[in-house]
Image (tube, each protein chain N blue to C red):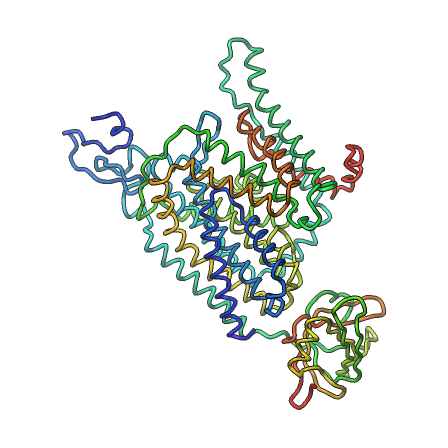
Length: 191
Length: 445
């Protein structure tokens, strides 16, 4: 037997060996034993987990992922009364519904990003904070261009459903729409 | 979110995972290097992507990160054997390689990764909102937490010499030699970090990748160089159809990794390495299997779980290179977007787990046919070229300096974890409020 065969465990077994087996971990030929003398792992199949069962675990995890994706298809942002949009909600995402009361267009001078704004009133009133149901909504740059292409720019009197990021501080509140899909106009509206 | 949009996002994620699998064949290449290339290409053809929904590109990067976090260590395990003539500690997966059990090590690591993916899918959508509370609690204390981590790293350095010198003085010098070189390495890496944070020479157009040459130099290139110098052979590998595993291994290893990932998510500059060192002590993990499972779990929790916090409404925790790069073109907003990203992570993660079993077989076949030195040489050439392409000659200079520092732990038997001072020291000083003062005193400002 060559020395390398001894190290690798690939040489012939001694005559005293009752039975021979292949270590399921390192693959060396060993005498039948509960523990491999080379890598010290347990050879009993009941103490080991097969790749097939691991793949089954992975399938269960994949089902969890599919469940989350399905959930995302149904989840909607709850509607918040405009009067309840306060400073504490700054930089959070909100959804509001109401009528467009005024529109405004500002052509940017130094960059290719026109700004379109409109005001929404949902008639709500918050007596504790004194907030009214009117808020400014801003759409700029590429989002405004895509709304123009789709004929979905809101007009005065339209009923709209808007989602966006709230920017709020002392004396100002504004909702910024970041994608065209976040603005939905009731049938018959838009230009 | 629209079902067709979700399917499109899934397709992009799977495409990202496939790209990650191809890139993972290069040993030592880091996920953030691949994202750097992707972003550079993206900016070059910005007009092409401007009409696309940013969720699609985001999904692609998510697939890239998930695929990479499962696969990128596999080739390193096979192609970078540990030569004990320059390494004092042989890690468990390196030991497995020499026992012909590298595939088993890969399977154990992937089990840890799968545990982390499962935890992400179950915990984050239902309890994730508490992350904002934890962040609020931890934020004012971060500077001293990072300081405590630094103290822990320095205190846990130990003499690597066996103490066989002929005189007490010689034995003392031998013992202190590796400890002092560890502290020297920590100091040099810290100095480099202060320089990079306050006066980097990287061109401004590449500044979003200013840390790339540093990390390639500190970690990747020294590993490749030492692989080229190694004289050990990789024995024939056995593809095990089963692994020795207990529930305790999965729970303890997985939990230590998840804890490490969470700690590093909320503590800037704390990467999975030192976080695993801390959590390993805290959870008293033991044995090779728990170590490897914890490593896989911590890696995924850090790269993927932390990234998911960026999409969580009310949290928006932007931590790590992937989140920073995604934030350049996408602002997450809604729960639907968050759930879509979470679903993609879990689904692609489960697919990547199955893929890792085949990937390991591929690595087994490659290492049996191609000399690992050629693979390291090729990987090193690719990484140097990438650093030069993304960060210009200035990046190459920084990479060269970083490589010199990165060689210290290998040549003097100290721990490579000291190199993370490159992040820990400047972040600690900046959060303490004295970063600029120290940089000014050093002449960097």
